[in-house]
Amino acid sequence: MGYKIAIDGPAGAGKSTIAKKVAGQLGFIYVDTGAMYRAMALFLMNENIDPEDTEGINAKCKEADITIRYENGEQVVYLNKENVNGMIRTQQVSNMASHTSANPNVRKKLVELQQKLAADTDVVMDGRDIGTCVLPDAEVKIFLTASSRVRAERRYKELLAKGEECDIDVIEKEIALRDHQDMTREISPLKPADDAVFVDSSYMTIEEVADMIIDMVEKKTGKKV
Ligand code: DC
Image (tube, rainbow, N blue to C red):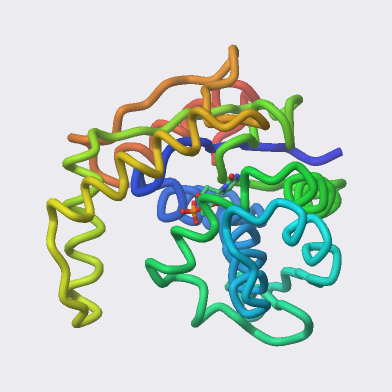
């Protein structure tokens, strides 16, 4: 079966950094499900599908062949056999993904793929619906959040480091809008699983959060990492 750790929460809470670190320390596979929704959004953008065009999304999403491979310990996302890691982190793709991830056909396809990836392996998976929907039997479930200002500051620093011009207030507004879209959508809205541990990372370091999760795993399994 494998041991499963589910980390859910809004954008910018630090999920992927922490999930990657925990997976590395435990020797588990890390699956970034957001990257899969981003690859699908990129595909639909390239096909000139409007984010509001439900019929178009329903028809086209079937043609996207999204796979994940691990190369030198890094997750690489392939879209129709092309490595798209370098193309899925733009603001445009973020905005498209926020719309297209609400589509039931998109979710069904990607959830099945995620469940297959996690079958029979020890895995740390992050996303929005991992504890509630993808891996409801996960041994450890974390709902990781941080205030919208702190999340905007983190994103602002990332973009500055990449040399991109940006405005922190605009970023914060976009984050709030995405939170709203993700939390109010009909299918698999972002919400903590009943048995998730709620962690506010606003004033915690990456190491503190990762250590906390490792601690939980050690207590549950009775084994030292
Ligand atoms: O975590 P991220 O920013 O890379 O996610 C991109 C988008 O995909 C975001 O709008 C939320 C959505 N998503 C989702 O609906 N379900 C998941 N399991 C992961 C991401």
